Length: 342
Image (tube, rainbow, N blue to C red; front, side, top):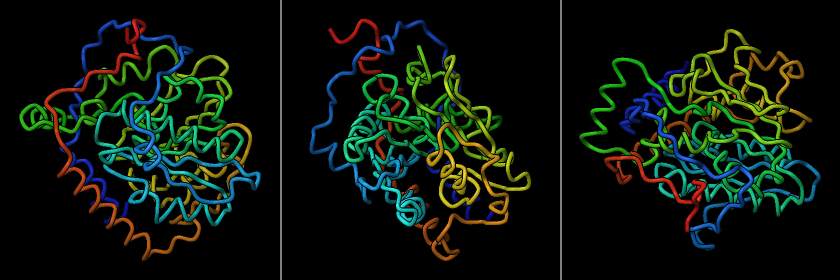
């Protein structure tokens, strides 16, 4: 793990005063059926449109990609110096979404921006798309698929790098220290929702986590210091095409941490490209083993990698310092419950 990656990972965890992380006692709410149509989106059309940027030739026959950034990031701070130019060099059209509050606000609201972004990317391309995200951005778009079922027919591939699909967990002594900090000083809304067992996570994983017609690839690192490997798996429905792989399954000696695997890591990128350019999920047998000797994604030089990482660190720090904080988890929107909004 590089010194820069260590700083970025530690800064992300500490600057956010991260998450409550104490499992929440599970209740027994009755959630809406997965096939219940979703409601109208609550943000204004202008707000939704301003949150999505797109680039490339959407008529070139290649599967378009929707990029979804991680916690405390925008699509620019997270992807403008790595994945966006890499897709452009590969002549793959892309869109990217930046939910409000640097993805530190209410993730249910952010999920509505994901809904809009999926619909827009699909409309531009005229064919099914790939959703590719890192960290929170590798998990949260499942809210769109769960509660806005029209989006499922628009997605061919769902590729998540280091997703906290089970919620985020930490070990002693971090848990009690961070919990106390959140109780006393408050935490961003997303921090509460990312806890293992939060109301948000229970709703997200209710009923059905995966859906027919979508190939799911979950890619993680055994050396991830931000999202533990145990937090990443999905619980696939019968018949779902799903693969859960470690970067080290292909490159056993590779030290890929939470930041690098979602920004610069060549092996992680090769797995993404494999998943979105072939039928089915990622297949490690198709990936050239020479990628294990490459530190950075194609076209990314060391100077740009360092400069981009420093800029991302500054963005994370500023976002965490300026984001409004709350003393408890936000309530869930009424549409997630079987009783609806009547």
